[in-house]
Length: 136
Image (cartoon, rainbow, N blue to C red; front, side):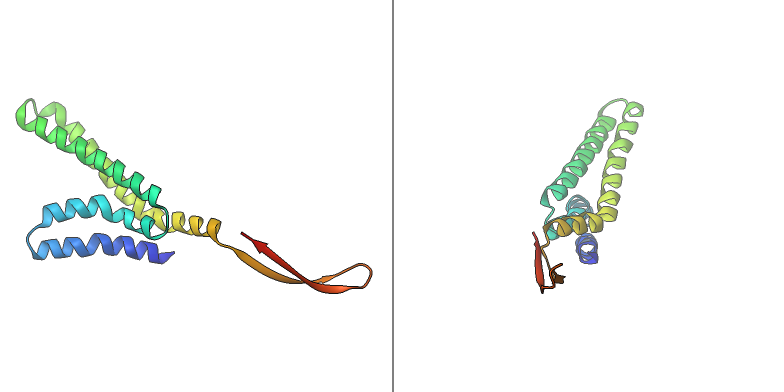
């Protein structure tokens, strides 16, 4: 399922490139980081897995934003760790989705695929025929 990885990578690279050309890098990168790693899951029919990754990254971004707002308004030393934790959550979730999308989509497709097989059959009494097997 290299196609799922290609869709995910394109969903990350194309918006960032276009955003850089239009000098809108930060909002486009934020949206691309949040949504793009899930694109392969949506493509491969694993929507809930894609939504889970978006939720985890959204939580990490929220944690980093809250820590950043606190750093500007009060004691900065105590909040740097929370900011870094939020950034680490976003980075880890993004890398995890990029690495795992192929296997997750492959497993999903294998469970959903139907298989049909034909095999020769010989009875002990000397009769012969063909056996059709269907796995759904």
